[in-house]
Length: 283
Image (cartoon, rainbow, N blue to C red; front, side):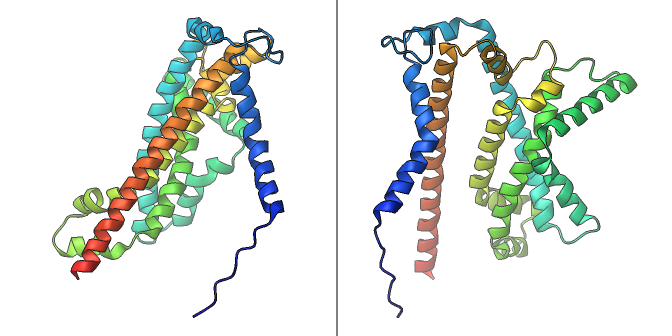
């Protein structure tokens, strides 16, 4: 039996860890702190106040941008998960086929393509379609949604594909040998097994969609202004305390969603381990 290597506690390691976390999260904490500042100047503290949160909810343009971004984000993440799951399944469960390498490259190409190039290419595509077929009549929610699905599906595909590669295919083969159809095997065995990856891909797709500015600027229209576009246009005139309040609320919502997702995934993993232990004990 090999002797375990003793862990050496070094103060430098702790210092490096604290510096790393400070570099990442200190600006966020400062932003949250100044969201409760009474002064209109975001860098001058003049007292505690929550008035900027009320001002935020009274800003119709900001609230319209929030609702539009959330709507497009949900639609984008859902469609990206559907496309990404199908693409990942083809790449991992379907045997080798002609053009497999090209298919995998085209699926993941949007990940490494500069956003400016992607946005310009999609703009030219929509203009050409409008001139040739009359659709889309104008750029708006639909064109933003298509553009966001184009690049978010690549990230979702990579996540779900990695999960599918780790699964033991003998379980799926055993189910088929017992008479289950491929569709039934997918929904009863494969889909529950990759559910954590699907959830992670959905959250990532939603985040990327809500956060995108460059591509959206190319494919949006005058009646479709997302939250990043509203924030960017307002920041150019000076940072408003309402932006700090909005960012604080976004941080709160994202943190809660992340914690809930982590808790559900941990419970599911714990349940799976208990079931496997019971099966091993029965055998």
